Amino acid sequence: SNPPPTVVYQEESLVAKLVRDFLTADYSAIRIDNAEEYGRVVKLVERIMPDLASRVRQYTKSFPIFDEYGVQDEIDKALRPKVWLKSGGYIVINHTEALVAIDVNTGRYVGKRTGRLEDTILKTNLEAVKEIAHQFRLRDLGGIIVLDLIDMEERKNRQKVFQAMEQELRRDRSPSKAIQVADVGLIIVTRKRVKQTLERQLTEPCPYCSGSGTIKSMSTICYEILTEMQKIRGDLNGHGIVLRVNPDIAQVLKEEERGVLRDLRATLGRDLTLKPDARLHHEQFDVMAM
Image 1: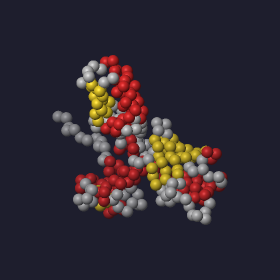
Image 2 (image 1 turned 90 degrees about the vertical axis):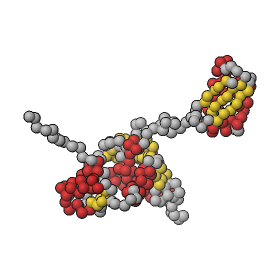
Image 3 (image 1 turned 90 degrees about the horizontal axis):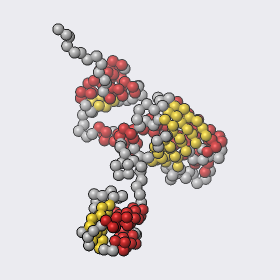
């Protein structure tokens, strides 16, 4: 008879992969909240780095482990475009189809009263490149990344910032390279894309704006409703018309754009009842004849 089936290869768990790929002596502890996974990781570490096996510890509190160590807060921050710097400046990270654009701003940081503006900008830029390199790893940013730094007049300061960026990239596990475009204050970084960005892994396009990040203004929508009603007025039978719109649009039609509502009633030549409906998208409306 044929021998029973046996497992030839079994994919490691995500936790085991992380331990295998990233564990070094720099880690003081590894805490795992699942007893079964904890047992597997202990065996793995005993095999690959036995000196660190004692640092693997089981987390047994009832409080969620991500909340206990502030991981969830850090994940939430990593999904926001704006990252504040300790000095009061900030960076803004924007994803496009072709590249990632990172803008640096001084924000609340104005430097010492007796200091030069150039020194304030230099300090902000130096702090920014350190944080940007951290965001590369945290967010799994890859491909072409354009850094728009705050303009500096002195060439030696621009060089300091570029060298600081190169130094940070040397610590990066992913192959990366920086190019300075000094005349316009840009640094272009190419970083090997190993996997999807954190944003792609944890989010999906907004169903409301289809991922564009914008929708039409309420005034624009009001005038589009007027135009559309003018097109279909000949098809509307009955003594009155009910116009269903999103509550926000209804409010605008009653206040800022009440002239549109007046024109609608004049165009239709009959009663028009405005009915707010929260189920409708801002850009949707529905017309019913009574």
